[in-house]
Amino acid sequence: MILVVQEIEELYGRERQILDGEAARHVRELSDAVTAKADQIENKISESLFKMIEILALFTAVVALLASGVASVTIGDLEWWQRGALILTSGAVVMTFFFAIRAVVQPRRSRNSAAP
Image (tube, rainbow, N blue to C red):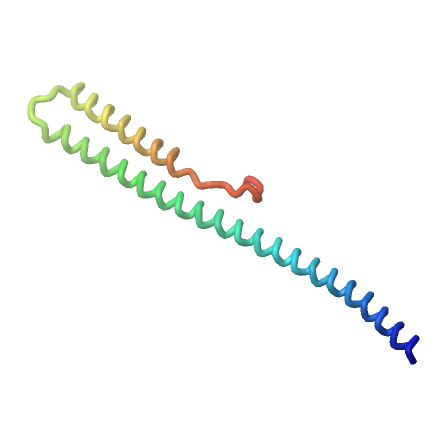
């Protein structure tokens, strides 16, 4: 009986070690999968926010360009080339603003994910 109980205890110990190893492996795999999905979600959110900021900056640039066009028309004594220079200058400033916003608000890339 004692030998049988010892054999059962040894068998139980080996099976317990095997199950512990498999459980730890499954937990690691699940943790890696959750981390990968979290990185994907963060990247999607970052890209979505970047798109919104980009759209707002473009809208602001268009409104500013229209405002400068209206201002050049409503200003009294200006030659046609002065109006054109005013519109071109304001357009350059507006495009600089747009590209500056785009450069400042770049979506961050996760170091674990590959480039799209």
